[in-house]
Structures are given as C-alpha cells and as structure tokens.
Image (cartoon, rainbow, N blue to C red):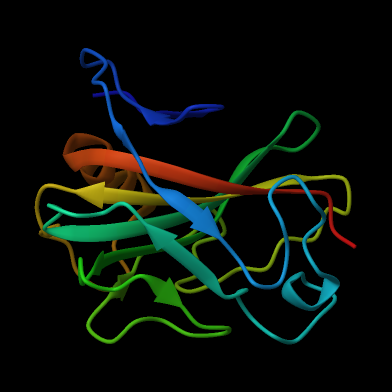
Length: 163
C-alpha cells in the first residue's frame, strides 16, 4: 500500500472509510493559531500539551505531528503509538506510560521540534481498532502504514506558523 500525507491525513490506496471525529485541543495554542516558540527548535520545552476526546471504542490511540510545507516537502516531527485508549491527554514534554515512539522523517525517535516559522504543523490524533505490532523506534513507513490500516477516528489541531 502506498501512503502519503494529505490535508485529510495519511491515506492509502485502499478504499476510503468514513471516520468518526476526535476533538483535539491544547491549553497552549488554539487551532489555526501559531505554535508557541517554546515548542519549536528555538525553544526547550519539547512537545506541547494536547488533549482529546472521541476515542470511545478504540483499542489504542496514535499521534502524528507533521507539516506539509510546499517549499520543503512533508516532514513528520513525531509519532507516538499504542497509547492507552483511556488516555485523553499528553503533557508538555511527555509520552504517556506504555506508549511507544517511532522514527521521524529525520530518523530521530521522539519529538523533533519544527523550525520553519512559516510552516503549518498538524497534531493529528488517531483512534485505532488494534494495538500496533511495532516496537519502539519503528521505521516511519511502517508506523504510518499501520496507523492508516487501523484508523477508525481522527482529529486534528493545526498550528499555522511558529510565534
């Protein structure tokens, strides 16, 4: 299956599914607003805190932070998967207990803070119908393929630029 990032999320060549909606927010920035500088490569706070609702019935949850800057191309800044489905938030510079992280576009495991002040950064939460059979540090194409194959609901918070 071929995967690519789009404005709707990660899609494969399989037939499209109607997905339930997850509400995603942050106490540090609003949807469409700028990402606070502290969560970029110019800051030192790591990932921003995120909250979500709407994952009832999921077997696990995943989070992907990416951008699709037309000048620099798509880049994945963070992949977290196998988050307990009862979890409804991630704290600042934190990973939920038991969750695993995959590699980013740069090959790093963990949050790779965005740098382009003009970028648009998407924090997408996916409700999945299974725990992913992947290990800590899984390769990016593998995690994206598995997330796409198991997504039953999706929600997004977007930061348009960096402060």
